[in-house]
Image (cartoon, rainbow, N blue to C red; front, side, top):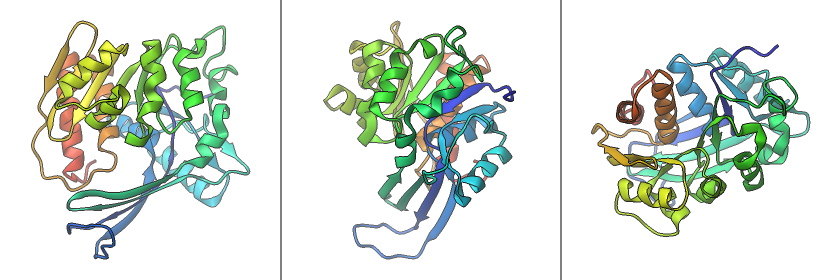
Length: 297
């Protein structure tokens, strides 16, 4: 019997190796700083934030049966997540992400999420074998998806009867994978969480502000969108209208995971019953606290 959960987080759960330096960096820079290894990945970052807000997320992902994988599963359990839904592979290694950040932002990053892609539909087994749901009883709760899944798998999830009753929340893993969200625009399903650059890639143009980006995504068929733009106004749009809000101004000390924190905080706010405007404000506040480096986040 699987422990009850409030939301399914489907996507990358891996080790984040992040190097941060207080100096402005460029290609070839060699400066002192700090290197950390923490549980990460889009699905994991979302799940960790949801857990901090009192929710119980279940993870649908691929983790290797190696030492790093065992350590990662233990870390997930310690953070209040349901791990019995994870696909453990005997022949695929545990995925990793490596990034370098300077005072001038993200310098470079490499996502080694090949195991998640190779596992494919195996990670969705609990949705059709009766563990969480089956074809006769589709899953009807919240699902957070990330763009580290393959385009083929995301396309299936965008139209699958297994998820047709679910409240889908979808985010790209990075601008380079933004176009993987296009099936959800075509199907008119789910809530999309993107930044201004990712919105431009999905619409094959560029935007000056989040509100215009949200309006364009809705016009292309998206059911609901949230668009962030760093320290500038963010927007949330539905078929009825587009609203916007200004994030708190803070000193930025970290970047990796900020978008995931925003998405999770927004989901948690709505799960508690917050209205559209309040949920957007709460999500922006949580993201601002995160990028400021508050130790509680």
